[in-house]
Amino acid sequence: MLMNKIIAFSLLLFAVFACHAQTTWLAGYRYRKVITFNKSMVSGAGNTISNYIALVEINDAELIYDANVFEQKVLNPNAYDVAFTTTGSPITPLKFQWESYDPGTGKLLCWLQVPVMYTKNEATAKTTVYLYYGSEKLQDPLNMQVWNGVYEQLDHLDHGAVGQVGQAKSFNGNSDYLEKPPTQKVNFTISAWIKPEQIGGEQVIFTNDSLGSGFLLKIDNFGKLVFETLDPPDVRTAYAGSRILNVGQWYAINLTIRPSGSASTVGLYLDNVIEFSRSSNHSFATSR
Picture (cartoon, rainbow, N blue to C red):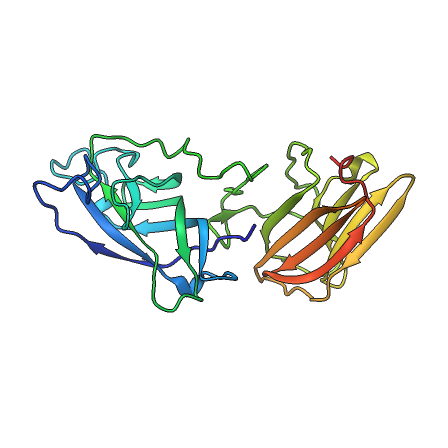
């Protein structure tokens, strides 16, 4: 999977009419604005990406909720009366997931699933969606299925640190870690944003080799990414990347494991550029 960056956009306020045609305006909403995504910030092999999940951040005084204001435009203290559609299908709501909403400032942050996102390869077309607000109808942005079934696990790491996309978690490099449930997959991709604060000494990004058979991805003493497998009794096989990471710089990493006959193909991508593709005889079916 490709990690999604925050997409810059512009907002234009549409006039509100007393009556809206049912085919051009989402029923029950009084206001809408158009969001235009900056396609120069969207990379891809082609001109479009299907079901692109973008992190949308909006700061707008019209989204402020104040119970003491009679004619406010957002009617719910959690902004659950907000909805999104594409401009091409303005009556079909899009799926989105709340990250945060500040009723005092009108700042909202959410993950939005965009059916078709134009990339920087597209010369003329651009991606636009409507933001609707001001309604008695309430959405449930905490339970929408934004992240479809291809995702085994997902963690936004909303732990207060400033991230490349939204918030992040800062690890102390010693006793600090996160533990996740095991997976049964043998065909999978692991993606993450990382920012090393120092180089020198091994830094494990993720691992599951605590049972004596597994794999890990780490930054080695020289600042290179290394993927390592462990097989009984104590057989370690390592595959190293070529680039040296810089301190204080964000990197998008994607590790792919793909079955290939009796073996597997391991691919490592750094900022969407391949570091290596190697054949491995490690049994990922027994790695948990």
